[in-house]
Image 1: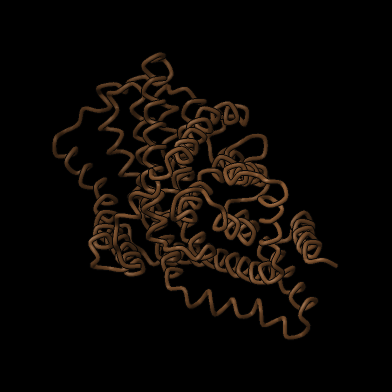
Image 2: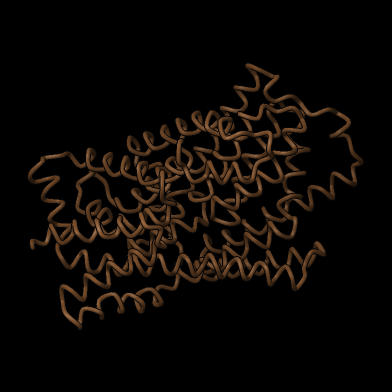
Length: 445
């Protein structure tokens, strides 16, 4: 059997196992280990086994549990709810102000947690009921929450970019800086869209009544003080990192410590909070570790076959496809896979093939893998929220109030999909939107 057929057989076997409902890391790890033993004999088991040491020697992995823990502490202790009340007061007098405040809340939650699920949960449980009570259009605001939560995997500290950095062997600090500007551009698009829609049709997003915003000065100051905590933690954590006083791992420890201290100061600290947060952190962190280990094992076997070079020769040498055509084909494949897989599963499955191929393409600029990491995260989030089977659509339905139907969620998302696609187009036309900042920042980690 040729190496090309072996590679196709490995991918086919993996997809069959996934179709049977097996866990992603188990399916990929089983195919990798089985292929190694069949190809190289009993000693082939060392190939996937050695990836364990590669994984445990990569210190940025320590940031994963730290940032996940920080996000859960801030949300479970009520700090995120205080932040939303503060934004409610600030933007309530503007048509669409609560929706704008929700998008800003999502940006801040992204900077606290790095996961889109956290932003979705907070937006659906805190912001959605409040906006519905104020007479906001349910289609508009369900799109706001879904679009805003998508920023969680792009704005630092993005957990998905940490995983991509591990698999693609790229500096996480550069990936984070690369995702910052595109993430803020997307947030700006969302805000402009909401403000324009509200100006054209004020009934979609009415102004909050004055009696809801009028409060004593002391209460306003207390509200600002409570809502400013996430800002203070984020700027302390990233400021020390950017100025070179702390490494990436040390900054994550600073963020986790400050989040715990904030819960203590607010009087919400308890051993139950620590226990529940620690269990959730451990569960998610272990899931990510198993996924990365499976991806590394699969990639080691797959690359040993020379499959990547064969596919590169097929696309470029035989089919004469341009590098940009190959990139667009990769993006489309992410959208298709996103209808039945989450972002980490997609990364684990295609990384052994796509990462070396992107590295080999001649796109005309440096740091192609950094740029592609940002492109990947945005495209995955489009897949996440695209009907009919987008993962986030059903998560939103399970979290949202009962008056928001699945059809409303389907209708709400298309403007935000178009704005994400516009961001991708800008990144392809102007790669320096993602690359300028990491090329000019010199940080540790």
